[in-house]
Length: 276
Ligand SMILES: [Zn+2]
Image 1: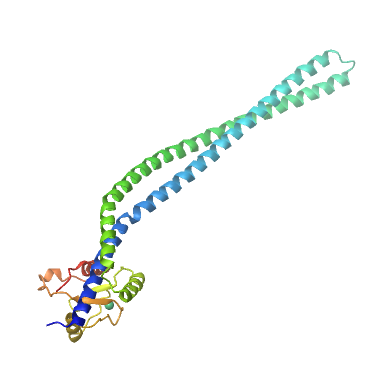
Image 2 (image 1 turned 180 degrees about the horizontal axis):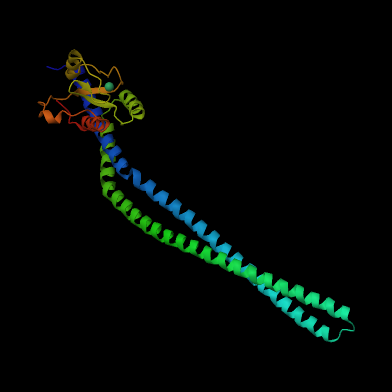
């Protein structure tokens, strides 16, 4: 017959493990969404950057066009001056006046040549800039398509997990009512410190389900008894029980322990059913 205290500890552990299972499920939901919101944000940032660059290039082209129009105006002015000078040359009184006006005409002619040269140069710059603009525009088009897809994907994932999330949150509220307030404090602290979000673990194959340090057989028996609250001596995680030993599978299954398999083992430990 179990005493009242025994029942309480076992119940406390059961409640904690239930909370852990729900929280691990919630962690997984966040993990699945994890990357997508960031990818969407990254794309939005990239598109904003491209739009800024496009606007800058476009204003550069406008600036070039203004320069061309200025050169054309000055060419027209030179043209008018040359016509005026030529008329003046008809009425000169001496050779010296004629020569002076000829020099002015020559000067204006040079100005016009320079303007033509500059216009050609700027035309070339506009051509290049338009190429760059076309490149940015096509990039922008592609990225916008990507963004649209990612956004849709995110919407689907959120819609898919929203129900699970709401259910888990509801379950969590219910589960919380059975968790001892003092234990909850340690639980929250442990979870906050643990990278894998595990505060309550099972002993699995003789090791802590959180940090994989081995647990001596006598301690395992104590944990199984659930007469007191026992924590891992290495990581401080709360032991909820000892998982039934499953007969070891074929030899080929005995592969090297990788980080990934450790993480998988931890996730399994968290999701393990409560052992009576
Ligand atoms: Zn541990």
